[in-house]
Length: 478
Image (cartoon, rainbow, N blue to C red; front, side, top):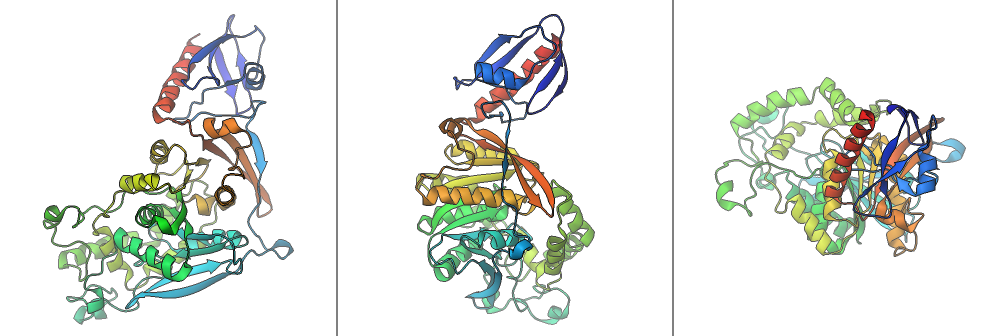
């Protein structure tokens, strides 16, 4: 049999005298294949097979299988767009503020929806090199229903120091932090995940004042998990958006005191002379607008996404005199006291709800990392979005906001409100695919989202992947 075309809804085939296909029986969790003999007609559809035999076609994508509705079609679901100013709907207004965390260290943050007095509190943590501006689509939209915060990590965004941590003869140069001696307030300063974890803890305690739902992208996802593992009493749930599974390269002095002594410098001020020279060379390259433009093209799967605001705000950050030395401190900071896997295990033991939302086309944090988290925490909802890259909250904010609302409502209702897509009980175990459609700037856009159920198994998915590809080879060879 020669395969001519296929889609989500049907497969058209030209056949030789006999046809025999292998499908997966949905009544078995061991992925046992069944063989079905087909009539000698010129074409058939997956829909007719699925509806007749209650089967699922093995999907060819690594680590996944398509679970469709009862007609065999992937269901389209219309979801709300973002507030766009039409009919006076501009969304919730955003306020910008500063919080004095430590002497000479002020944290910039933005808020929305503060009038929603009794609504849940939601805190967004950004990735490396960006800031609160990367979540303004969430603040403006979700602020209509919740009380929402986003903050800039110290050493990034608008949370850079207001004065030179190492003033002196070299303080007259374009770069702060390149002097020979540090000021007292900066003598132990190092921009590490431990500093950011402490920053988030104090922010939740002193500014928000109650447990939060915390959402982190990339580096922000790592910090969110780390913070939750250390302060479970302050966290109602964690959402990871393409969270980086590791951060830092040098050994942590508390975990590896002997090994850490080998490295004479670990991100503190002042920067050593050799590091200053290296930083100048590297910074000149990575802060170049052309380099930033290329990075944005790389991490956004849909190049039609408007990234002009993100681009201009990143450029603005790089022009701050403290930016280069802060970058060097971050790059040479030690690893955290907990690894990503250790933090994940703690959160699981402490029963902290976790939700996973990953852009499938992320070139940095590939889907395999999200699937490993899912394998570790089988009950965590996992939504894989395509096309979407490393920053799905900015690329497909309509989808992320829709899923976040559904997940929070599910937790706030103690499960009486179902998770998004879980219209039928079996979907919660087996998973399901949906095509989400929404309006943006007068046009209709859509993406596919797969929900991985609690029966997800990494090795079963590997087995399915191999079996489906062997089946395809067998079909073609026939």
